[in-house]
Length: 330
Image (cartoon, rainbow, N blue to C red; front, side, top):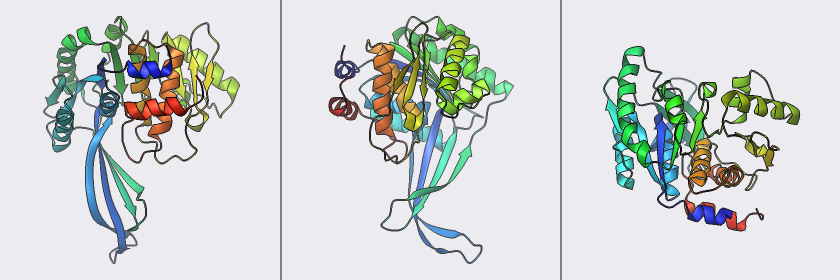
């Protein structure tokens, strides 16, 4: 199957996304003057936008690619949680698997962007809110997630686990999902080693270095050794390591490592959310009938598009199809 045909097959694929639903807040303004109170610039506020981040960004990407995402997660009874639910409702995304939990704080990443009147605004500060949950809250979350997953797993054609470390993914769930016959993929910021016997994982190179306790330093031999060792430890069917401007490396048992050069131009506007885009496209390609190599190639195209966009924005199916059409023969 060609890459173009795979993209066409994205339509209406049902993908469960289990993970940390994060609100990305972008506060934009113009630098007006230096404060008299302290040696800092005063920002004249222009706009505040709240968009899906983390697992919620993976959901948004799946929707933009023509799939039917089914998020399973939690939000707090707060303004950011309500904004995420309202955003999904406005897109027609099923929110039946999202539970509102009292006492839980919706993880929020607020980015302050400043610039001159006629210049692009640059990020000058990020404020993170939300922390891992305690044991009492964890039991409530586990019960809520189990209920949300029960019906959705039966309908799913693929599952994405997006674990940013905020506690929405109960530790006992990986083995249950690993027994699924549908593709189950993983993007875990801090505990990739806790998820075994899944279909595939898509860590970036720094996450692999942290998991393995090594520094790859762009050394091909170290990359090969780290990839092979991690793949064996996880017992996944594949491991896709994203390497920024160096492209991607796909590891499979018994097969030669596939090195995929980066696609797109050299200009990188913003890497925010690119990993969410990668796992969304990679998983969707598997659900559409593609193999690991073709799924990785499509994810590589999508990652190249994502980093050209400012802020947290999804890649659309039309954009991906256009990149495949204009790209090198695959």
